[in-house]
Structures are given as C-alpha cells and as structure tokens.
Image (cartoon, rainbow, N blue to C red):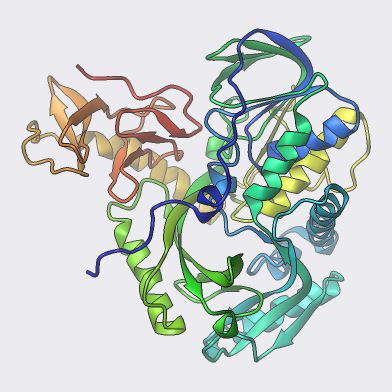
Amino acid sequence: MNQLSGKPISFWIESTPTPHFEPLSQNIPVDVAIVGGGIAGLSAAFKLKQAGKTVAVIEARRLASTASGHTTAKITSLHQLIYAQLIAAQGEQKAKMYADSNQAAITQIAAWVEQEQIDCDFQWKSAYTFTESELNLEQITGEVEAAVRLGLPATFVTEVSLPFPIAGAIKFENQAQFHVRKYLLHLANKIAGNGSHVFESTRVKTVERGTPCEVITDQGTILAQDVIVTTNLPILDQGLFFAKAYPKRSYLVAAKINPSQAPDGMFISIDDPYRSIRTTPWGEDLLLFIGGEGHKVGSESHPEDRYQALETYGRERFGIERFDYRWSSQDVKSFDHLPYIGPLTPLDQHIFVATGFSLWGMTHGTLSGMILSDRILGNDNPWASLYDSTRATPFLSQTSLKENLDVGKHWIGDRLKGLNQSSFEDIKPGEGKILTLGGQKVAASRDKTGAVHTVSAVCSHLGCIVNWNSAEKSWDCPCHGARFSGSGQVLNGPAVQPLQTES
C-alpha cells in the first residue's frame, strides 16, 4: 500500500481560527438552551435570537468541530437518489414537502449570507447525481422524472465537466456550496451577547424535565423554558432514536487542482462505490474534495484502506499526485430517509431533537433550526409534520432489521474478543487491542511515544464493546456510534461519559 499523504485534519477546521468561547462558569437562566454547536444548533439559536429570545448554545468541544466541521458542505436538495423512492413510499404530497423544505433551506442560508455579509466563499453551483454505467441509467432518468413532477429544477444530461465520460446525470440548477465553518462561526459571534451565550468545552450530562427544564452540564446548570438537542444522535435516550437510526462514517481526501482542470459543480455518483466531488477556493488555486467509502461506525478495522481507495480514484481520474488533507465524518441515517425534527417523546412539550440527517446536513440542519424555532415561537411551519420526530418508524423494514440485529450481534458476540489476549507487548505504537485482564474487557492502546493507555472496553452509552480505529486512533462503538479517544474521552455521542479508566 502507498503511504497516505495529506494532513489528517479537516480543511474547514484548519483554515479557520480556533474560536474562544469560554465554558459555562455559573448557573444561568435563558429562554432556550441548545445542546450542540453545529449547523442545526447554531441555525436554531440564530433564528431564536433574532426573534428576541435569550439562548445558550452548549458545545462539549469546539464549535463546528464534529459533523459540521467534517462535511463536504454541499447546500443542495439533490440528495443522490431520493425523490422517486419517496413518492413510492410516502406519496407525492410528502415527497413535495421534502423537496420544498430543502429548497427553502437553501434560500435561508443564501439570505443569511446576504443579510449578514458573511465571508464564507458562498457560490451558486449546479449539483449532479451521475452514473458511469448504462445499467444504472434507468434510476437516473426515473429520478429526473420524479424531481420534475415535484417542481424541482431538474434536467437529464449526458455531458458534465468531469474529466471522464459518464452515462448520464441528474442536474439541479441554482444549488450552492460554501465554507461551512466560516459561516457557522459568524452565526455564533452574532448569537453571543445581550443575555445570550455560547459555551464551549461544556458537556451536557442530562436534561431534567420541568418548568423550567434543567440542563445539567459538567460545569454547572442552565435553566431553560425550552431545550433543543442537536448532537448528531441525541444524548438523551428516552426517544429511542438509537434504535430508529444508525451511524455511518465516511471519508474525504482533498488536493490542490488547477482551476482550468477542475470540475465545475457538485457531484455524487450512484455507482458502487459511490464518490462525492466538489471544489473550494484555496488561495489562487482550488482544492478538490473526493469523498465516499461509507460504512457503519465501528465496523471497519483498517480505515486507512478507505483513504487509499479515494486517493487512488483521485490519481486515476484527476491526475492528482499529492493530497493535502484527509479526514472522516460521521452522520446518522434514519430508516425512512427522513430526519427526525420535533419533540423528544410524544409527552415532551419543551424538549426537542434534530437527528437523522442522512448525510445531507447542510439543508437538513438548517431546516431543523427553522422548524424548531417556529415550534418554540408558536409559529406554524408547513413542513413540521413530515419530519415529526414521534412518527411511526418502520422497525420492520429490511434496513432497520439488519441494523438492529447487527447491534445485538455486537453486544453479545464482541464480548468474546480478546479472551486469549492479556499482554501489552504486541501492541505497537498507534495500535489498540481488546485484552482480557482479571476477567474484564480492557481497551489498550499505545500512543506514538510508546505510552500505554488502558480503559474499559465497555461503551459508556449502552454497554457494547468498542473497536479500535487505526486511522483516527480512537475507540469506536459499533452499536450506536459513540467514539472515544485512546485515553477514553468522548469524541462523538450519544455517550456523555468517558470510558472508565483501568488501573
């Protein structure tokens, strides 16, 4: 295998200054507390602040540093293949609601960029879903027909600006792309002040129902009339969203490309394996993004192979010699392909969630902010019913059965890992293994200095056994997607507690 090139960091994060919002330092009251500092949480907070509410955004790490900081940042209603499927499963009326709501999210982002004069490399672009195989053309033409029926700006094309031939593509005009973190940090700076707050390095442990609700963090308590939880997969388990959706990890590499050789637009394929492609300004040049290689969190022992596949694609298709960045991202997919936006449970009138964005977080996250702010402000929203978080969920669908059976398999079967391994000696720097010490499952890893870290291998969320991620140097839970550093600190929820330290 060739050595991977590029910095192991998101371009969005490296190319923006580190925000400096202080942790919560005392108990405070606000109208609305928002848990999670990504696009959904910041969009909701910005709209509520504009409407006169006092808000507090509470981020466990740094703003826009997890899903929103690792996205491809495409602002589009062209979600690979979705509309023909939605018409068949949900009916044309609901499919049109999905189309209209995502178009409205594009309009909302563009309006904020214009009104706030946000310097975030916002560009109107066409979006394409393409195939290189004649065998897949029927899916492409069927999606075009469905999109046109729903009033979307769709056409069928056979020529695009990619440097290789395609069999056909869906084209949506008047879509957009931007630098997501420049955009979100601008919103955050506008939120803080005049009785509203943005807190970083403040981890929410739980939310207690009441009037007001109590948002209990590791730094203190926030009292709020309403609470919005936007933590990818909710950290609150009462809504059972961990059983109604599943986490996926995907990968991205980025390389400098001459603008004269770069594709113009945003692209995603339907072939196997799929590829996602776009560019972004980078000095006098452009940076080409190539994404794909998705899999369920915790199910891949050698993610380096995923990066390698993307680099190989870039070399073969675009003549790239050296890559500048590589990173991975995590998102949550719902079983019916619709986000969950609304109350935590049917009994909750003041605790809300947004999750299940199914890899299209720029529009779905913005839409979540629109719907939930309307709910709290007492405004009608024309799309709220489609995304109702308490809707009946297809537990007996093929996908839901597969994913939940997979959880059961890991919960039971992974306890057999490491039964005959009890030595640290064969753990090399950068590696991690599950060992059995004193009858307990231990997650042991060795960092690049040679130091060994040992923590419990039992996920602090619901008790599955974690797996070592050799590319990210993390412990990943294959059941519900929680991720932890080598020393056991939480990187991704739904876990809120670190892995227990083993002495």
